[in-house]
Length: 470
Image (cartoon, rainbow, N blue to C red):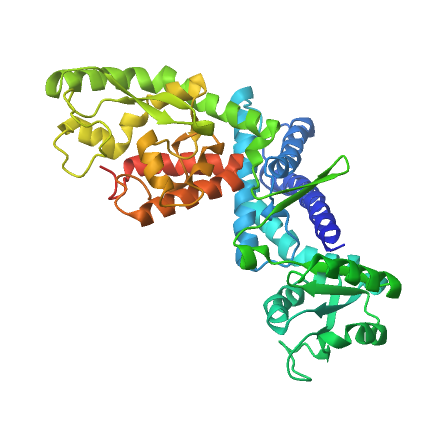
């Protein structure tokens, strides 16, 4: 019941945002050209209708490209969060329109109009998210759709969850009290105690709420049937809230398919073939461009530096562990002298194995560019967990439980850990944990937007490298 209300609200918000954007587009079209246009012929609306459709489609597409859309969360978010979401949506829409304009070489659209419209759009999103949706959502769940709700459970569990329900009253759940242990009459955040747990059935019969929400995992599965039976007999919806993160340290994923219920422990967006195709196209678009236009001049420059400072092979290939633990040969520009007695030892600051230009390449991450060849081959992705030597993986796995989960996806040239500053020499167990946690977060929260953001941040860090880069 709660999930359906949330998902329904998100879907309505999606269409309202898309429709509002189109209305704003045409409203600004009329105002802009009536006020500022001085040419002999008024712009024909047909061409602008195409761009209006692009804006509408971009909002829908942004939702489809992400498995977990915080952008479409119901309208009870703080203004700061709504503003951040509006700017993120604006970036996606602007990128879509600019890409279309670049590909079609369209010279008939007014740049001044589009730029001013993009400046207006965040205010439209903010108005819809923060001012239009709350009263509209309350209207959806008013009258008979507003459900009198009782929280049931241990006092501490009720205390942990009551704020969530009080902050989500737009969903039409009016909490009238709680049934739980503790001193008689003790209120929690202004919520009165209706009865003790041992008087559950009597209290439910007396107050007749529309919904009883049990907070905290039941002591035994038999309680589930008891609660359901009691709710059915009284005509009360029964909902259980289980805080798996607090009790077990993880959140399971439950999915129903063809009569079977599957429970897993990871959300893996890249197990979707659609998402994998999208990611592969993104990888190829980067790799082909880099290999055609950036790699050849870099090869010439590095070859010359090798001749002057450290003659030897242009590339350095090393075994690394990739997706599902498969070993592959990863390419890099050689940054160490040819006579390297210990290739598995991590480079340190002022490492005498690294020649002068090689040190500069490592600092600016130029030595990683040949890995785009690995991306073309399919061994790596542009973004993902950084691949390590097999012997390093075994050592890191002994430090962080679940370390090998990061191999569920292809390794990347850059990743979430790297843009957070966790790169370079692994000096202690904390370094391993921070990098592995970032990698697992990436695995569960992948989106095309996240990949693009990591690539842009990586490009910035090439010009402003962190202190850990050497």
